[in-house]
Image 1 (cartoon, rainbow, N blue to C red):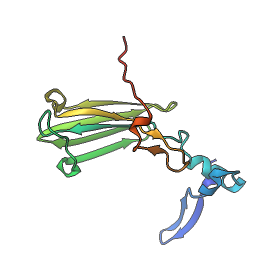
Image 2: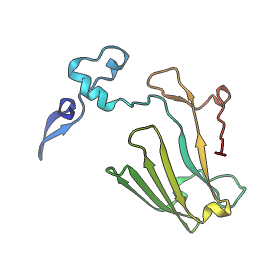
Image 3: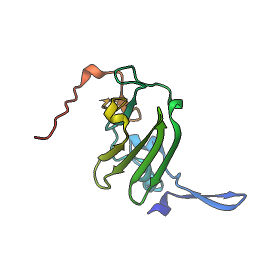
Amino acid sequence: MLADAMTTYDSPRGPVQYSDKFDMNSMSGEILEEFRAGAWLHANPQRLDLGRIGLVLRPEAGVPPEQDPAVLEDPVQCLDLWAGTITSVFTYAGHQVRVTTVADPHRARVAFRIESDLIATGQAAVAVRFPYASDGFFATSDWTAPDKHTTLLQRPP
């Protein structure tokens, strides 16, 4: 139960509850009963990073990609928790970009839609990156070992 993970604190506005009943040290061994609900709530069911999906933006096709997020104008992001949807809108190089990302409620997968004229001009492209799995429990990915694994993209027939 969620209530089992909550602690009530006094505040100037009255009592406030936080889901802070967990002990990260218990992740390496047996979890005490008082921390079980909080540990479950805070533990990622997929311990390793599955990958990163992002946009590569270029001022012109074929030139090095942008590195400074300040080049994005008018960024707005809206999270719809109930639908599992995040909509991000921003302007880059005078063009609006709209990215809609949805999460599968039952599996470790996402889908996204990018709406922008920049895709056709080559100024925007999708980047998919996968890390090597880290040996440590709290360090979940190793981005410094690209030679230790291979990623193969296959298009459906």
